[in-house]
Image (cartoon, rainbow, N blue to C red; front, top):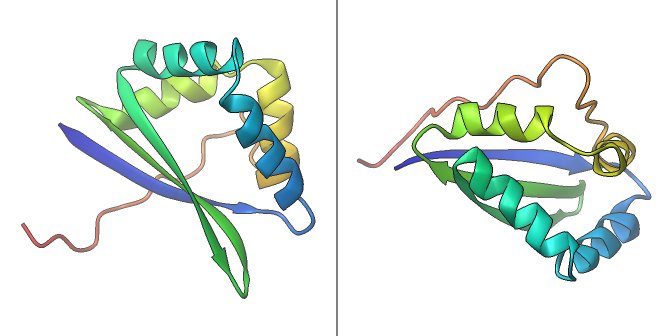
Length: 109
Protein backbone atom coordinates (compact mmCIF):
# COMPACT_ATOMS: atom_id res chain seq x y z
CA UNK A 1 0.00 0.00 0.00
CA UNK A 2 1.35 3.44 -0.94
CA UNK A 3 1.11 6.65 1.05
CA UNK A 4 0.66 10.29 0.07
CA UNK A 5 1.10 12.88 2.83
CA UNK A 6 0.58 16.58 2.26
CA UNK A 7 -0.15 19.74 4.17
CA UNK A 8 -2.29 22.75 3.44
CA UNK A 9 -2.34 26.04 5.28
CA UNK A 10 -5.36 27.24 7.16
CA UNK A 11 -5.47 30.85 6.06
CA UNK A 12 -5.37 33.55 8.76
CA UNK A 13 -8.73 34.00 10.46
CA UNK A 14 -10.16 30.75 9.00
CA UNK A 15 -9.39 28.24 11.76
CA UNK A 16 -12.83 28.47 13.39
CA UNK A 17 -14.50 27.87 10.02
CA UNK A 18 -12.23 24.85 9.46
CA UNK A 19 -13.02 23.45 12.93
CA UNK A 20 -16.76 23.87 12.30
CA UNK A 21 -16.45 21.95 9.03
CA UNK A 22 -14.58 19.15 10.81
CA UNK A 23 -17.50 18.93 13.28
CA UNK A 24 -19.92 18.69 10.35
CA UNK A 25 -17.82 15.92 8.77
CA UNK A 26 -18.58 13.74 11.78
CA UNK A 27 -22.36 14.13 11.32
CA UNK A 28 -24.62 12.28 8.92
CA UNK A 29 -25.18 12.36 6.03
CA UNK A 30 -21.95 14.27 5.40
CA UNK A 31 -19.73 11.64 7.07
CA UNK A 32 -21.09 8.78 4.95
CA UNK A 33 -20.84 10.82 1.75
CA UNK A 34 -17.31 11.98 2.52
CA UNK A 35 -16.16 8.48 3.52
CA UNK A 36 -17.73 7.00 0.38
CA UNK A 37 -15.91 9.50 -1.83
CA UNK A 38 -12.61 8.32 -0.37
CA UNK A 39 -13.59 4.66 -0.70
CA UNK A 40 -14.65 5.25 -4.33
CA UNK A 41 -11.28 6.92 -4.97
CA UNK A 42 -9.50 3.91 -3.46
CA UNK A 43 -7.92 5.55 -0.42
CA UNK A 44 -8.10 5.73 3.34
CA UNK A 45 -7.70 9.33 4.53
CA UNK A 46 -6.51 10.72 7.84
CA UNK A 47 -6.65 14.44 8.63
CA UNK A 48 -4.54 16.14 11.30
CA UNK A 49 -4.46 19.70 12.63
CA UNK A 50 -0.95 21.08 13.22
CA UNK A 51 -1.00 24.30 15.23
CA UNK A 52 2.20 26.37 15.13
CA UNK A 53 3.23 29.86 16.23
CA UNK A 54 3.52 30.73 12.53
CA UNK A 55 0.06 29.54 11.53
CA UNK A 56 -2.05 26.41 11.44
CA UNK A 57 -1.85 23.61 8.91
CA UNK A 58 -3.90 20.60 7.90
CA UNK A 59 -1.89 17.43 7.35
CA UNK A 60 -3.59 14.91 5.10
CA UNK A 61 -2.57 11.32 4.51
CA UNK A 62 -3.99 9.11 1.80
CA UNK A 63 -3.23 5.38 1.77
CA UNK A 64 -4.09 3.10 -1.13
CA UNK A 65 -2.78 1.42 -4.26
CA UNK A 66 -2.25 4.75 -6.07
CA UNK A 67 -2.93 7.65 -3.69
CA UNK A 68 -1.68 10.22 -6.22
CA UNK A 69 -4.35 9.17 -8.74
CA UNK A 70 -6.88 8.92 -5.93
CA UNK A 71 -6.16 12.51 -4.87
CA UNK A 72 -6.87 13.60 -8.45
CA UNK A 73 -10.21 11.77 -8.36
CA UNK A 74 -11.10 13.42 -5.06
CA UNK A 75 -10.24 16.88 -6.41
CA UNK A 76 -12.19 16.44 -9.64
CA UNK A 77 -15.22 15.00 -7.84
CA UNK A 78 -15.41 17.61 -5.08
CA UNK A 79 -18.90 19.06 -4.64
CA UNK A 80 -19.43 22.80 -5.09
CA UNK A 81 -19.94 23.57 -1.39
CA UNK A 82 -16.76 21.80 -0.27
CA UNK A 83 -14.79 23.30 -3.19
CA UNK A 84 -15.83 26.79 -2.05
CA UNK A 85 -14.82 25.89 1.51
CA UNK A 86 -11.39 24.63 0.36
CA UNK A 87 -10.78 27.79 -1.60
CA UNK A 88 -11.87 30.08 1.25
CA UNK A 89 -10.04 28.26 4.07
CA UNK A 90 -6.97 26.85 2.30
CA UNK A 91 -6.61 29.01 -0.81
CA UNK A 92 -6.98 25.84 -2.88
CA UNK A 93 -8.89 26.15 -6.16
CA UNK A 94 -10.18 22.64 -7.00
CA UNK A 95 -11.11 23.82 -10.52
CA UNK A 96 -7.67 25.32 -11.19
CA UNK A 97 -4.44 23.51 -11.95
CA UNK A 98 -3.64 20.85 -9.37
CA UNK A 99 -1.17 21.77 -6.66
CA UNK A 100 2.28 20.28 -6.95
CA UNK A 101 2.22 17.09 -4.92
CA UNK A 102 4.88 16.45 -2.30
CA UNK A 103 7.96 14.39 -3.00
CA UNK A 104 9.51 11.91 -0.59
CA UNK A 105 12.91 13.26 0.47
CA UNK A 106 13.77 10.75 3.20
CA UNK A 107 12.63 7.33 4.33
CA UNK A 108 14.09 5.05 6.97
CA UNK A 109 13.27 1.95 4.91
